Image 1 (tube, one colour):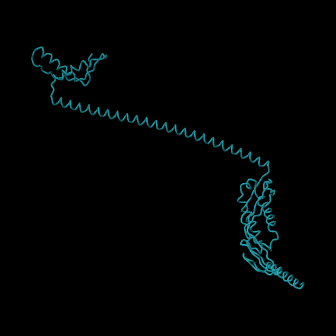
Image 2 (cartoon, helix red, strand yellow):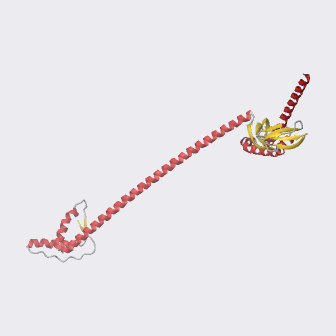
Image 3 (cartoon, helix red, strand yellow):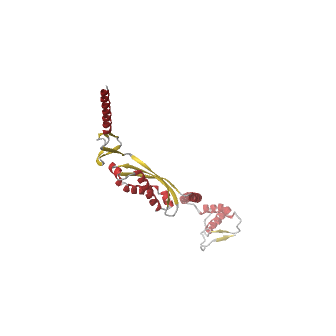
Length: 323
């Protein structure tokens, strides 16, 4: 009975040992990992994702995470080029490219990356003025990423990007910057207000000028239209008078008037000529012939015979004065 128990116990022990041995021989590499296989302390090969069989107690598998990871750089005080102390912290995003280099070339990558980022962050910001460092985040990020990427290349790591989380000046500097910003904004507001008043005044002046120009142009056009109308009226009246004179002149010549008729017309016109306040009336020298015709006409009425037109008296070319 004791022998049977011993055989069963030994068999159970061998089964457990075999199970542990087989379990130790199986290695599973996940999709985002790669494994580095060592045999008796010597590198053998790199294991891709999947199931792998190794020799227990002789082989050792070290896994490397190939995903993008982040290194949080702790806050630190940095002196700028103009001797202002600012507090800066950043984050570094990286991904492994070679698991062999990552395992064998650096002992503690996280600590090494942190110290390397802090050192180079001090160097980059130390070459800038305070104002430049506050407004040049992209420039600082790009410069720091390039430096870290070059330094970590031998570690089998690629630095994807670097982001500054905070650049914080001292409290007194921050207050001074706030006052400066407020003064600058007030200055810009006053300048904009003055520019607005100036533009408004210019616009009003231009409006007044344009209104005056339009008013003057309107008046000039009105005067021109009135002058054109008066000119047209005078031309029309002159043409009418000319046609009337032509008609009268033609009618006179067609009627062949005698001196008697002319004398009567002169007599009809004399009251109109004498109607006025003038004490003297000047008649043309041709009136002498007409007056002679009037005298002859009077003699004819007295004698009852046909009047005979007297010969016109030739007088010098000057006007006769009748008082």
